[in-house]
Image (cartoon, rainbow over all chains, first blue to last red; front, side, top):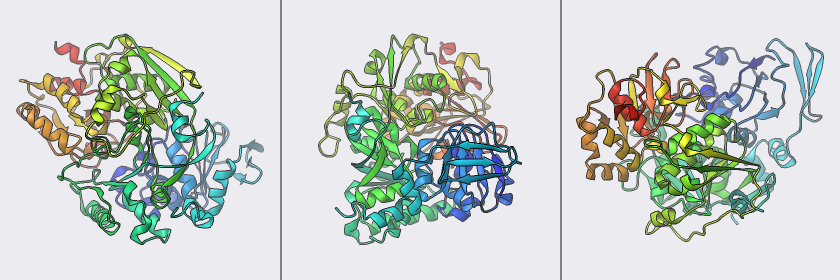
Length: 162
Length: 415
């Protein structure tokens, strides 16, 4: 597991530049994730890696291609001080885990961390620290547990064809 | 007491609600993934899509910029045919243009409505008193199937702008000034409402620019209480009935921010963030390209302002100027008013409506080291092309004046 650290206001044009928006396929998009600002990302990223960032991660466009590219790259979860709202919704709706926690100044790329979603705890084994985070509201957790909005709708028969 | 957002979403700030939406808009980039997800639900029969609510607009990469985008546009066209989508807008045809201009001109956007669109600038229709907001393709698909979507009711910030606007100060400068003040995360998860004498006097076009860029401060919506200007615009245009919604006088605002318009000057947002604002007069930056267009500033009012400055002048020898009317209707009107002739005689390049270079698509993509003064909405790293190119955001008057001078210029300097 590797941590990829980014700064504040990481916009969706950085996550997936517009010229690659001719497919919605997560794997194909992943090949161009962070192409302009961190070209080595798509080569080196591995299944289970984690992104740590500052404020307003995912600001800008509504392109769902951004969280799809991260899912396609194998990113297990994004930890940020705050998220842009459309990115936040898109991630929950397609099943990408997000953690809102103020750990930007505490977690470095070389750190080894463990996450417990049930308890709402990030353990930094390198620094021997623990950081609490607030679990998602119940409704959003249900969406994530179902695997996203579409499986949730199928499970709940959510107002279908009323 | 409720704000406009709380009234339209029928809930209190912080609550999660499920609402019936009036329209769902998708474009050529977000539409294909939306229909793909819709089909995953297994409701392919035509009767099972809420097609009367669905609006499909080809605008981002059309006319197709390459084979991949041509395939994408074709896939969207095929979905629109398969599901018999009547609100389908193809390039060149009546009513076509940049999706948000289409939603407004074609009478989908109206006061009190709840509209979602798989494009972040869907918040534009707040200028007509709608609660409209950008969503992803999966959410659009869910709403196509159910007609409904979940929302977290946002808290609201009230912005009050009083005083007198100076010459060449437009809606763009008001919103850039505000974003410069509160930052790109200043309205995260929130709804904005705009009030004050300046907003009341502002044209609908300038109001749309303000609502359009609400998302650049992280806002979910940017709403302006609808008045006669909106009702006049909608007469003979709006689809169906609508009911204006206003906040209660004692609306519960999380924050009230007041601005004196006389302190707002023609403003430029420098790379690489819309909140990196400075007065245009303080910059002395040579430019390679000037771009007039987009859902933010591609309306007839914007073209008039630029044409007035360019009339009888030439675009600087070192600058390419690109003019992109936001819709076919805007293009026709500009032709009729002689504006297109003014642009052509000034050596600007004029093309049909498309999102074009705003998002680095086509029609003016930048090379490394190039700088563009642009009426668009984002100046992120590589937004209009190469990662080492730069975008400076400004109003149409600043773009026209800068095109003439070859460097970023406050139009007052040309007086």
